[in-house]
Image (cartoon, rainbow over the protein chains, first blue to last red):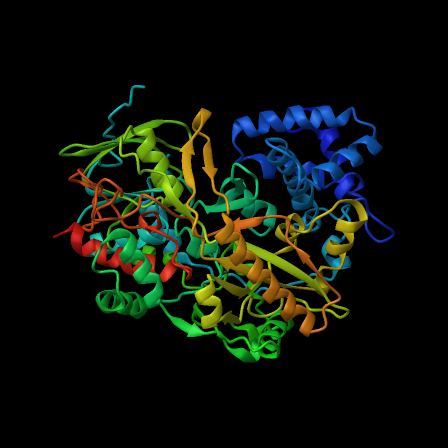
Length: 152
Length: 469
């Protein structure tokens, strides 16, 4: 797959680190097997450019790690409570950033978009109900007539 | 940088008022001003989101409805700041809790700012005006889910006091199958009383002009205030106004004033967030926290209040919960796969140690915000109370969340009588600036320890009268 924001090494690094948080089991496939990574650009489209730059470097580096070294690294990153100085916030940032990226892709219900994905929400039995959205024609018209952004 | 001053046929470039930020305060102020016949332009960096286009998937709501694609971390990565970016602001994505300040909160404001109107007598008419325009009801107890039952019964078992919470809503139709956890990405049935419903619609009918997806970069004070920024296509625009209202929140206002070379050293200081920490408890039966109302009860315990914290009956969608669970591999995966069996309560602390907002390289937001020993003690007291509640209800184990959450972003442009120690004066005017005003959460002089929404609304109502005086 191709991304507008991540290079191919970073994509591989994200798949490998995603498997650390989502290893899968007999019911659910792992992060890399799930195919949800193809939606990564939806997640990154409003992220600041220098954050994406840093993400590419980190994930590209991780793409070359053996999986057991990556597991060890992220385990260390997730136990950062007593680390000194700048190491603690840096490792916390890495842990939460990578967990956030992979888990948001996996646990957002995106399987509705493609039947090839694992039925994560069904298997979790997480099924909140919603009534039909109000079709707010009045507001639609008011926005169309009063928002300069609509004229661009 | 050169800014082109444009007057295309499709729009005017001078207004009586420009309001920067379309959140809770900006919506109310804009509506108040157009109602008095003024020409008003609202500039908002985010989009219009309403029932026709709320994102369906959490990944999209996180990316599109918040700054920087979801969460911004403080410099020590201990607190994730959640900063809404859309017309209607936090009122679109919050829980809808609307509480008046108590005397303790106003006394704290008055002591810090020296401003006399911070009391429940002077604020009463403004609360009344807001509550006339917004439906506030007790969340019906008959629809309370098991997460709420655990909260209520655990409070009772431990001798704590809780009550049904007051929420801005009309009829959430929980009996017809509506689960309000969906509303954290916008209420699809227009029950939740976001300011989009209660004020923006009315303002648009009265002639409010809006420029959404427009990011203001700089303001220039003067007899006519100039505003420079750019649209979603990176095209630069300039507008002017007789008066400017800053309503882009604690971080937005502070950054804009710093980027515009305002020299007041108090800008960005005294930043508070009511840091919130979620604890999750595993039970050996299904809790299904997604069912019915998201929240039904609030802690109403004077002992908690005096000790500087409160507890909230909360949960969040799976994508958000996944970041809160600690650990990796099967430890983390197990929690997510069994999310139905978890209940959650959070402690929100009335933080005393102020943070600071700065602007870093590439205009990056830098927020220093740490808990001192007083705040840490408040957090620990809340943890103890939550664990007692959960274990009294048969929890198998309790897991502390990975990090704190900052939803109530307050301060940075504190209000005060004294220009040496504050940014905004009692007339809601930036000190020494004749035509630039501010009345949103950025003016809070300290943390009230109570949900700030209703008071932001009341202060914004009051401010409109002062702007046009």
